[in-house]
Length: 233
View 1 (cartoon, rainbow, N blue to C red):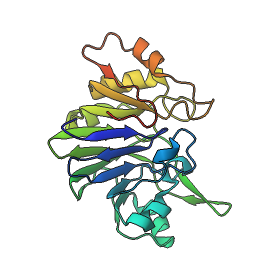
View 2: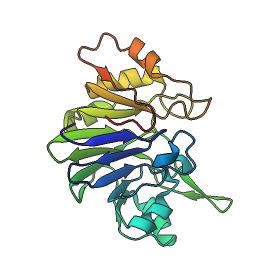
View 3: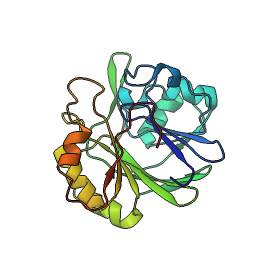
View 4: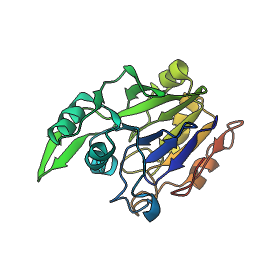
């Protein structure tokens, strides 16, 4: 991991700690996240946040953490408008195909196949389209956080264009890919290190790392890093 610590906080939430101490939070859902260890629900530092889409199990703590730490926040334009309406500052809106620098990292927003809306005071606010992120960390490590997504053929393009070494892929099924689809995603991306996510948080998310391992045994050199919530790669 080139000196970076990648910590899974349960569901789709990750904290990436760089060698210089800077912390990037992806899909900040901590306080309401039943999979997140209690001790890690209140981070001590957040320098950047990446928000894949508007659902509460990804956006959950964005307003509170945005106001507390004033991190640079990468999200789509519609999520930016909503966050700004709540008094959050330092937002860096972008859209699919675009790349920008946030401190030490370079972030590209890529496609995801899902839906996106923000539940706000009993109404659903349009939150633009869902996305994934390709993150280039100092020292040359490139990781892909797929967000909530189905498998789609253009994952092959993401693999060819950005060559991620590590992919965080949803495997829970029902609302995202299950193991069968994630196995295809691994082949399309041509990636050799995978952290499964978006599974086990609730009983309906039935996909397991064991099932994913079972159907990817033929992929030479593949390592599936099945972290427990709170564990670090």
